[in-house]
Structure formats: C-alpha cells, structure tokens
Image (cartoon, rainbow, N blue to C red; front, side):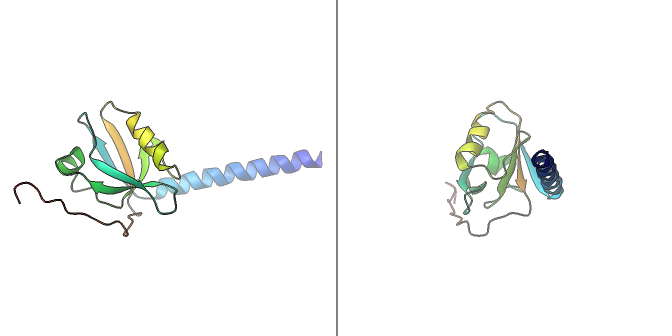
Amino acid sequence: AATAVGSQICDAAARQATETMHSMASLRPQLSVTFVREGPLGMNLTSCRDGAGVMVLAIQPNSQAAEDHATVLQTGLVISEVAGQPMDGLSYQEVTKAIAGHPARPLTVKFWADAVNPDVTIYHQPRSDE
C-alpha cells in the first residue's frame, strides 16, 4: 500500500512539474511568422549546439523568408513551434520533418524571441545587382 501511495505522489509531482514547465514556457516571448506562399520557406536550419532544438543558420536570398519576413527573421533564432506543435528539445530531423509535413499554406512558425544564438556565422551573399 505504501508503494502505491508513493507512486501516486511521484506521478502527481511529475504532472505538476510538467504543467509548471508548460506554463512558464508560454510566458516566454515568441516571434510568430506565417508563410502564405507555396514552396520552400527559405531558411537554412541547424541543430543548436547542445543538440536540443533547431535554429536558423541562414536566410536564403530571394526567398519567402527574405522577401516577406526580413524585418522579423534573423540568423540564430530558435524554433519554438511549427503549426501549433511545440518543438522544444526536438532534434533537427524531427523539426525539419514537422515543417516538411505541412506543405499546405499558411504555415505558422514561432521562434523564441529571447533565444538568439550569437555564435552563428553569417555569410553575405551579394545580390546579382550589387
């Protein structure tokens, strides 16, 4: 009987911890970008250094990301949601699969506004008219 009570207490504590983490995560500021045109989004992605999460490595020139969302998107932003599904802690393969699994538009992708990775190297690609 004591083991069953202890198990119930552990389960309740785990549930409360999970709920607390989700409510705290919902308080973090996010940037929301909705892609409305069909085709590639125009973001090169990479795993975060710790392997948990995915961030924007580069914005492709002349893409939806560059043309429609240049004022919001930047390298180093960490993806928090794809089409309403949380992406925290997921691998590169899981996040890119979530994006590829939503070819229909509109597609909303959210990023943690307070989690820009400053260690991303930005490569300037000159436009053809430069």
